[in-house]
Amino acid sequence: MKPRFEPGFSDLAAALRTAQHVCVLTGAGISAESGVPTFRDAQQGLWAKYDPHQLATPEAFEEDPELLWRWYRWRRDLVAKADPNPGHLALAKLAELVPRLTLVTQNVDGLHQRAGSHGVIEFHGNLFDDRCHAEGCVIVHDQRAEVPVCPNCGAHLRPGVVWFGEAIAETALNESFAAAADCSVFLSVGTSSLVYPAAGLVDIARENGAIVAEINPNPTLNSGNYDFAIAANAGVALPELVESLLN
Ligand code: APR
Image 1 (cartoon, rainbow, N blue to C red):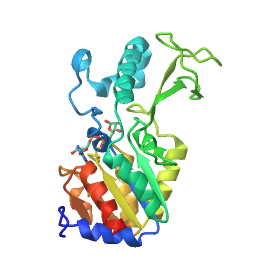
Image 2 (cartoon, rainbow, N blue to C red; image 1 turned 90 degrees about the horizontal axis):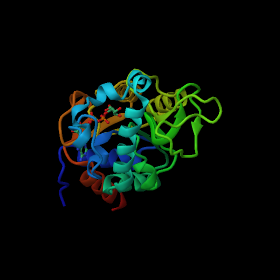
Image 3 (cartoon, rainbow, N blue to C red; image 1 turned 180 degrees about the horizontal axis):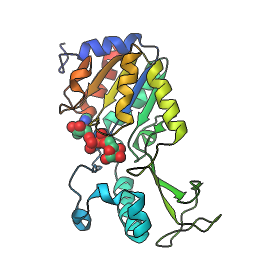
């Protein structure tokens, strides 16, 4: 049967069949089918009047930590009610079918892990971590205070995500760059490729000889630079890719 996503789908499947190391970068698009809203989607309800690009900053937190915590608790509730979708599940399965797979995600929702993926590199942190805003340490226990404080130093705790203007954790950065440089196939899924340094991983992969491919129903700024750009939803194309590897 002819695959539905030509051009490129069978070439990508063939490349995956012989790949020694696959590096996958995911973005908000893979969680869209789980109903998780992105920053670039309109905010809903009470939060519609706020610009997330201004809220998700250290400056906004320092100015009004209560407001930020109310927003993040709303986001945590939304994500807690969402479930991994067939796209997340297919990537967990793909890891079992290739010799090595590195999964780098810009998402902070933890849905890859809930789908069964291991060793996920969370480029932008995790929504459910509480981190000391002064020292950066992650505090595991959940506090009920409107603005929780660090039990070690008394500074405000904040959600463990990377805000606009903040640096990516060094380990995540180093591991992702190394995986992009080492992989034989680089797959970018559901990201608009607007936010660096994550958007630069594909260039590292291409410069080091990897086959690079994108799965996104809409063209991105990078689409023209991929060997294969599969215009499809992740929740449909990824399970079909995995299926084609099994046959
Ligand atoms: N399957 C695959 N891709 C999809 C789907 C789908 N079902 N639905 C939407 N998309 C694509 C959109 O076409 C878009 O290109 O997902 C992309 C989502 O883009 P963004 O909302 O810009 O998300 P992302 O690229 O992850 O953003 C990067 O910016 O918002 C900040 O820090 C935040 O980590 C985030 C970063």
